[in-house]
Length: 109
Image 1 (tube, rainbow, N blue to C red):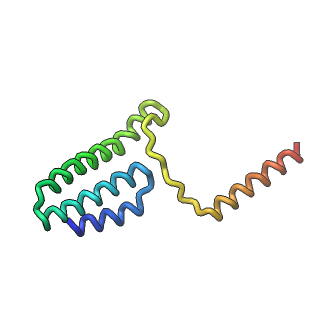
Image 2 (cartoon, one colour; image 1 turned 90 degrees about the horizontal axis):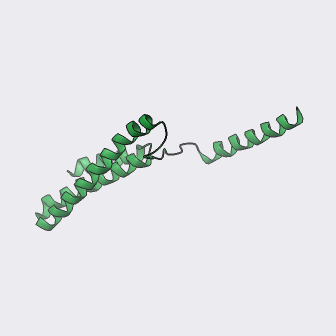
Image 3 (tube, rainbow, N blue to C red; image 1 turned 60 degrees about the vertical axis):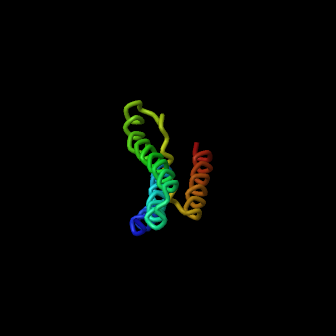
C-alpha cells in the first residue's frame, strides 16, 4: 500500500482541478492509513481508514458526476474549479497586452 500511496501522491501534483486534487489527496491518505493498519493491526485505525475510504469514494463520485450534471444543465451547478496553469509572468504580460489593446482601440474610434 505504501507504493500506491506514493504513486497517488505524484498524481496529486498533476491534478488539473481542485476536485481531482481532493480525490488524490484522500486516496493518498487512504493508502498510507492502510499501510499503517498493516503494520499495527489496530481495529480503531481500521475503522478510521474505512470512514476515510468512504469519504474518498464520495469525493470521486462527485468529481465524476460534476461534468455530467454541469453539461446537462448548461452551467456550473457542481463546481470543480479548474486550476490556473499560467505562470505569473505570462499573466502579467497578457494583462499588459490587453490593457495596451484597450487603449489603442479607444484612440482609433
